[in-house]
Image 1 (cartoon, rainbow, N blue to C red):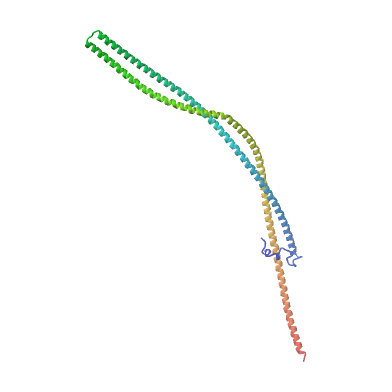
Image 2 (cartoon, helix red, strand yellow):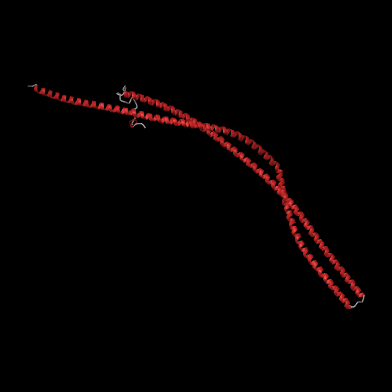
Length: 358
């Protein structure tokens, strides 16, 4: 900071040689003040040069900041290119996954069709076997009915023969009862067989209904399989387009990878330039710190020189004031002596004037 005496006004600056007392000029104090002012002038020029150098360094730092911003912009474009390449890779992976899923779906549908054909063939064989069993049982029932009819015919012929043979009534009744019982047993056996066949027919009808339901389900599965096969065929028809798209994606990926390689090389060069610029910025910061320290030391020296000059000027002013005060006191003493002498002269003159008339 400047001394208090140097900040009171421009009219009396102790550092200004013209504002100092004229008695200082040509003395040792004046020479010291002149040298101090010259030193201050040289320090001021040095400070101006340092400020100019600092402005140049600031311009260099601004230029390096612009270079860093350019590098950041290129880095952002490189990151955008990487994001584009990543998106293309993800899209290619999604297309490949879609193709794999469609191939898996096609294999699954083919397996389901094969399984449906096998089930339909098995159903047809089961239905054929059941129908054959029904036909066999119906043929057996027809044979039994024919045998019953034949027995009735034999019974009628036997009755006719017995009537013609004039057999006794009791023997004929006994024979008829025996034959009726036998016929009743045969009829009961035939009824049981017919009931068993009817039950088997109901069971076979239930099986046939179940088979019909299974056949309808198989037809529905065949219809769905046909629709899925049509969809797969449409996908297969699209495979050529997808392959073209994949080829285009591969070509685009190759171009993007080439561009990424060039960008990575450029980015590496920019990074090396950034490292060099960072080193230069570090050196500039060190130089700036050194200049700031040098400037602080110069300011301290200037402050000390100003304090020294101000002290000299204060001492000179105090000595001048003391000399002036002593001179004033001497002048006042001389004035008092002169006044006393003047009073005495006036008294002597008055006394002489009073004595002359006598």
